[in-house]
Structure formats: C-alpha cells, structure tokens
Amino acid sequence: MYPRADHLPLTSNKITSSFGHNCAFRIHTTAGLLTEALTHPQDPKPTGTSLALIHYMASTKHFMLYTGPTPNGYKVSVYLEELRAAYPDLKLDYDVENIDISTNRQKEPWFIAMSPNGRIPVFVDRSRNNFVVFETAAILLYLAQHYDKEHKFWFDPETSPNDYSEMLQWIFFAHGGVGPMQGQAHHFHLAAPEDIPYGKKRYTDETKRLYGVLEIRLGQGRDWLAGPGRGVVSIADFNVAPWILSHARAKVDLDEFPLLKAWLERLEARTGFQAGLAVSPRKA
Ligand SMILES: N[C@@H](CCC(=O)N[C@@H](CS)C(=O)NCC(=O)O)C(=O)O
Image (tube, rainbow, N blue to C red; front, side):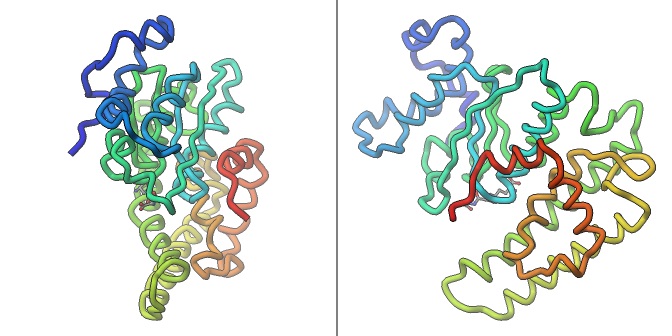
C-alpha cells in the first residue's frame, strides 16, 4: 500500500535548490515518484518513473492532469477549459500527461502512489502544495471550491443551498449511476473477451433508463440540470456530458432522448467544452 504522494516525506533537498524556490513545494507530491526513481534507479522503461518525475518537476504550471481520451478524463479537462475561458485573469494553466490505460500505466507504483484506485484521471494542484485529487466528481468540486470563487459553474452552499443540493444530487446520480453502468455497457460491447449477450443487454438497458432520468429532468422546463429557472450550466452538466457524448459506444441511440440530445448540442457549442475534449485526442 503506497501512501498518498503528498504525505510522503521530503527525500532530497538538492533537487529543490536546482529548480529554484518556486519549485520547493513540489517535492512533497513528487516524493512518490522520487521514492520510486531512487528505489528503482535501473528502471529501463522509457515511460517509467524517472521520466514521469522529470516531466513533473520540469514545469511551473499551476496543475498537472493525468488523463486520457475517456468520458472520465474529459470531465476534468472540460471544466478546466471552461474555467480558463471564464477567468482569463487567473491564467490557469496545466500540464497534461495522457496515460495509455491499455498498457496499464495507471497501475504502476508511481501512479498508485498518487491514486490508490489506479485509474485516470488524477489531478495535482502544484499551487496548493501539490495536493492530489482523484475521483472525477471530487476533482470538479475541488476546482469549484478553489478556482471558481465567483460561482460561475456551481452554487454557493451558503447563499443558494437548494441549488447547491440539486447540483450535488445530479453529480452523485451521474457518478454512481451513469458512469458505472455505461462503463459496463462499453466493456461488454467493446472489450469483453467473450460475447455475453446478457451483459450487453443489461447495461445498455440500464444506461437507457438513466438517460431517461436525465430526459425527465430536462423535461421539467430546463436547459441545464441544476440552478434556478431553466437552470445554469454547471459542473452538474460537465460531470455527465462526456458520458452522453459516448452514447454510441453503449449502443444507445440519442434520438430516443431528444431533450438530452439538445442539451448535449448546447454544451458542444461551447468553446470551453470543445477545448476540453481536444486536450486528449481520441486515437483514430
Ligand atoms: N470513479 C472513477 C472512475 C475512473 C475510471 O474508471 N477511469 C477509467 C477510464 S474512464 C480507467 O482509468 N480505466 C483503467 C482501469 O480501470 O485500469 C472516477 O470518476 O474518477
């Protein structure tokens, strides 16, 4: 069991000085990588720990995002790009390392040191002492709390408690429902080593049922999932949209859900949304 990288002890002061005073704080999170690099100096893999460490250390950008071209990966890059567009003065910038999950890089010790779950995406906040966040919904809420101070894409729990609660309801609904169920649909249709019609049908049907729930919500006179009146675009929408975008992989026809289809088109028309998808290009 690897501890969280930012809880690991400082391993080397020499590296701090060679990167200048702004980089000193980074050592704490990189300690996981560093420990691996020092423990396995013979690591021959070009994508191994030592290169990951160098990549991490060589930048002064605010954030580091370990991600990939998947629905969960896109959730975070979409919100990051929406934030960049909404808060140009913050000059939020970030490094991206696209993790090829087909080679199981996300199961390597340096990655597990950051995220014991061994899945992408993982977000590291260099500006806040290399704090590490995994689980997409938690990353979105973290970004909202620290970098969306004007509540452009979320609701203030103090002044708008009901909107805040509804936003959480739709985030949890997607995080516990749409993601896992549609993920299984993708698996049975595209990745399972054997053809299992029962699994395909069960998870496609459940995905359709969950899309139907979103359709009901949008049918309540709404453009967006949370917020007063017709709603306001928020992280409740960003959190589920990349899954809906992948509907074909789950063998779901979006024409069966016209309000959801129109909602997705509204999101796709947004510059930030498009930029977020471009962060991790899908392989042809
Ligand atoms: N509940 C997690 C799910 C993350 C997840 O399942 N990521 C997938 C890609 S969409 C992954 O890393 N799969 C590789 C693996 O399972 O090893 C979250 O929301 O962050």
